[in-house]
Length: 142
Image (tube, rainbow, N blue to C red):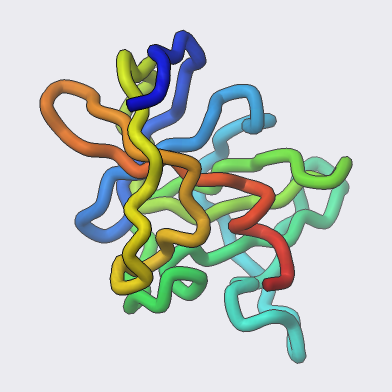
């Protein structure tokens, strides 16, 4: 078991899973807006948006994890994170809350778990296990 963490995380839903991102890696959370497809981009890139005059690539976590995408609805959001001095949007089904985890366990070693290579650990909040994403690994080319 790892030591207790006092960092805060944004907890969000993707399909039926609850996931978390360290709040220090997030620039802002915006409502879903039209995404323009970019031909010949990486498979997990949904497209780009214009955010106050700046073009931001948007990642589909469903595509990154090999899951079927559901159409966005009124609760869908784009979580804008910073990665290598750039802003990148991540599509999520909806943002639930900000929370801290008292204990964080290392991610499962099994390669049978979808997306395990993109996780930093697993935290517990209100009796539920929540996977903590590693933004660097999630957005890298590998």
